Image (cartoon, rainbow over all chains, first blue to last red; front, side, top):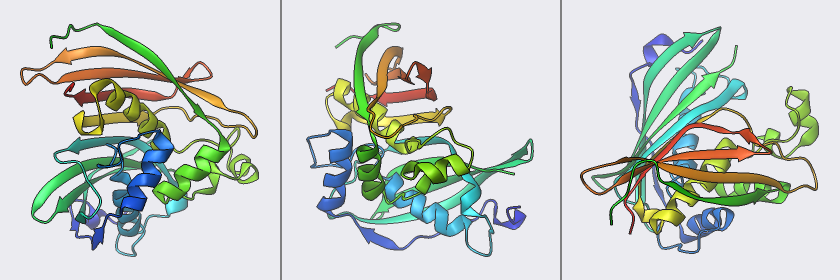
Length: 128
Length: 134
């Protein structure tokens, strides 16, 4: 069970600097030749790490081995690019139980400086 | 440019094999063994190694970006992971993507309703991208 008082909380992430190598590797998988900006789904590389760290922390208490990715949404205000210093804040925005499984929606707000560049939402299913 | 709701866009086929899964694992940082180790995948009840849902979503997003004229044209993108792309050893499986224009907005952006199948099975649900065609 997810600790109930974790729902609604925001967990601030550490700053990470995006490298050109990371974008190149992501683009290579997808077949994208323009590596001057990150592909639309690139932010998952940062946000899922942050979600994992938050959800598996003792104060939330999720066993990551039980997690399945249910759905995913991105809103891209400004594409990420190499050299961006990004802070990813994770908010446990939604929670429900269905058929013994727990569904938690983690909203990740990725800031470059003070500007909100990308928001993404991951619904993660904790299997019973 | 004017767009009409209901217009169908050309199909594009991507191919997925074990090497691509390894490449995505390294690029994304998601080293879950269900995407690389057949014995492990089967031990947790999967039919075989499966592709990362986010790899599938990434490739379908690439389809949307290709149509719109680049990654920067994709403003919103969402999908449900309904069925996995199953990737047996030494095979290239298809990820076949097409789309219909679902809505045209006042700001000129359009919503693509994306259809993605592998081996004839629909793998994403409610896959939608809002893009501004360059």
